[in-house]
Image (cartoon, rainbow, N blue to C red; front, side, top):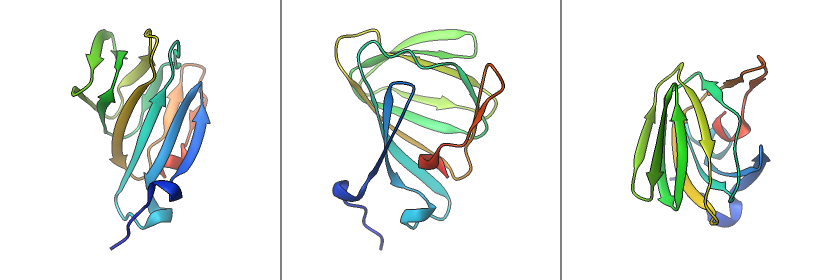
Length: 124
């Protein structure tokens, strides 16, 4: 049974946010990836279209989430289901860092508005 200790998690940073990666093929996962997102105050990540379903659970704080054309304020305890092909934008308009837990299947990619495709290492 693989156990990933918090001290063994790998941290990645992009667009002002931190992604602390726990479950990936490199840590023994065969189908899923999981990470903690840390979204600092004032962060406004660019909109991106995801290739795979993601489940995003707010652990601490609140965020403004735009999913396709709908914007909602989500708070600790809320969970979002982001379907493949959906366009997602995340903003933290508060004065406190928001923490999330995200899972997806291995192989996620995200396309930015300018056509740039990101293959995040925390989801592959």
